[in-house]
Length: 261
Image (tube, rainbow, N blue to C red; front, side, top):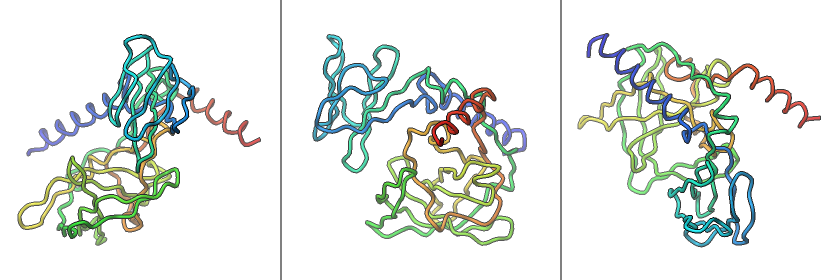
């Protein structure tokens, strides 16, 4: 891939990310995550009343013809919002995705580092054993386990590092933080990793490091980086920060001061 193709591919990725995040029902539009019990109740932003059953969330007091039972991953649009069923370790939630959510309407862009071929790093993959798991803590303190995919030994700016990756139905991925995290970039980032070659080598394109959903809405419950994926190097590649309208940021700061008073 020559330099023109490299930059074109990065630009297309950047544009697809922005569409996915900023779309009316995109990542930034999550307004509420309501954890349900077996007792029907009303919830902010959602029409009707909702409760949890063993394998689905169920709504009542809804308009005739509206779907009332959603299994995790299913969704339904009603009254301008999208209702989605969400599950985590057996607990069920109703998510309200609202185009008018402040988390979406205040968003004006995603800051990125300039793409660089030096940030496509080749490492060596060591697969985890069958059934291996990784302890994971989420931003809300919830502890769980993920399927461990393995580790990748690589080097960034002369520093040898190990990237621990998990595996899901979409392949390999990782959560990591670096010396820029929490300052010039968000406190951690995600990265998808291609399948290694038969010799175990794998090219990790950190230009495609991307912000987790919780960088756009506090209603997500993103996993934090495992200890081994918190690096001392400054990895200036990929997405940095969500950019918001200055008035929206001022309003959020004012609300935080009021809450703290």
